[in-house]
Image (cartoon, rainbow, N blue to C red; front, side, top):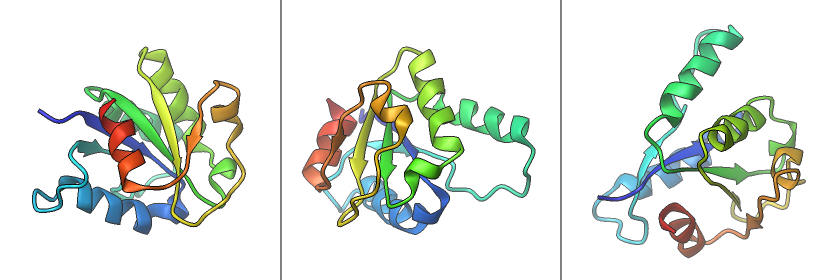
Length: 130
């Protein structure tokens, strides 16, 4: 059974992350082999407690979180919450840059000693299954 991974990302990177998720869950696409949980569903609320509850629910049952680092991920309000919720559960957090993007590293990653890997499907597969 493949690992179940929570994807953390900034809203503006939704389209790219959705494409990556599509590859990961497509049985014909053999380069990536893991299951994904995320908040790709758009929320019709700004209620912080509702969103935190949704994040918590989706992180439950995962083996790790992978943060996708885009141009402005460092500005995200929610990525630090997702990182902390994962760490509070004693699970690892990994980070990978989006292809061709060299955005600033979010402080929630550097403060927790989380290395940011360069983009490749091989790196993503390794992070999702190590």
